[in-house]
Image (tube, rainbow, N blue to C red; front, side):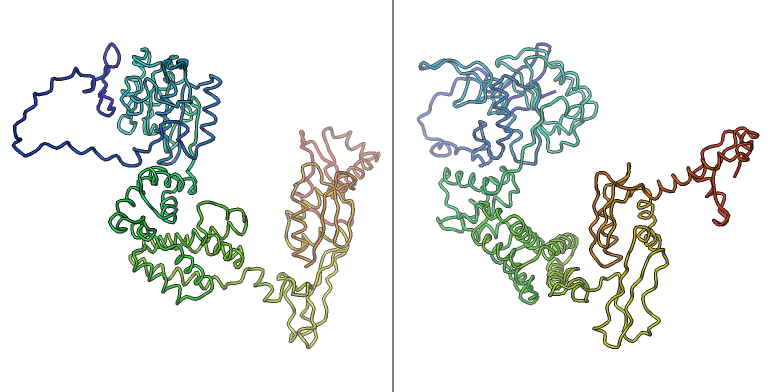
Length: 635
């Protein structure tokens, strides 16, 4: 297997790894200078190749990494305490520094600096690398013989891993530690992962493994458990904008702050994407700025994004219900080169900003926001309610999905704006209930609840609230009169706990009925107040459930609370106690005792009086104990 390493090709052999690089070949004699004229005119030195900004400003030390402070702090403490792990797993989205961190770690493992000018020599692992060490430049250029990088996307098989295992036992050629960097490690096959497990768990003392991946879920848990994992975070937009500003200053490029903020937002937390976009913006702006600063307008045209101020204008017009103005603004943005789907995404982003400012006002201090975004975002947060903002977010997200499959994106975006504008005036459920006459009015008086609609004035007196059928349950209904305003709604009054259980049965809420009978040990029952002790095994949310049911059934607010002790036996416990008392009394009867003695194994399964009526056989055996012998039974 061949390992590509920026101009160097390493091939395995019986003696280990061999470096083949033109830089290590013996120098060839240069041809004698010729003072005569060249056939193609005067010789000129070839221009140096341009290095893109993403490579030119790649971090070389941990101090240069931005946005990864937790990882840097952990590694710094580990190196200072000499608690260096044998394998590291770096994961994160694209462009946050996984491969860069791996190379910096390889430098830290092999950092050596000879003594010079009274300074002691450094010959141990450290992350404090103020200047280049003996092996640093070769590791940075990815051409060090003992730092081996492999792209798992193109070397996925067990043969590639077997070669790593075979060569891991050999000592490093030049450095202190042999480092294997495997990028996109999730692309390895199952057999390759399994073949790596033993060496990964117990590697030679001179071997370190560093894995990088963007899809951590595809890495087997057996591999993850053998590595020290670091999740590299997305870089904050404000921190990324500051980094781009420093790069522009080093390059001698003038650029507007709004343009930097636009690039930072478009990069979505990726430093490599941000530098690539900056490279493109410098080239694009140089042709339009005529020596001036790269303008934000140039960036909008290059990226195809909408003007942020116009996006906020579009948001305000839509949320105020001005459909004609909103469609006109969208058409102007479309004619200016903006993508309708991107405009909707920008609207959703501003909706999210307004929601954050309403719920967390400290979000206005973010460095990624422009002054206009802060001012108008706070204004939108003050005017719009949370239900309106969340509804706008849902409509916009649904609209973006529709635009992806639409053949006419502008028309689809227009319809999304129409939908959003008409939904902006839609009342919330609470407002709709108040407008319909339910809930509380402006004076704070209770209105009829939706569960008990008002009686029609033209209805006859016989058509009223249905009287309750449960015990001790009173249905109070007022007679209807000619004026609708004088007809109060029918209300249900509960006088006792038994009436509450009967009401639950009448409402066909059998789960609540069973819970009231078996889990409630009543302490106190008054109008609007219930206190009880919860029986062992009872549901902890029974009090909250009971409060909701009572408010829905009676139209009034009840206070239901659970106390630690002091409750009377539950209804089920009372029935069981009464059953035991009656059974004990029956067993002491001489006639019954003689019957039980005459039929061994017979049991009393139920006790009922003559006035209790016929009971089904199934009900008789509900609480019966299992009968081992079917010799007979007594009732």
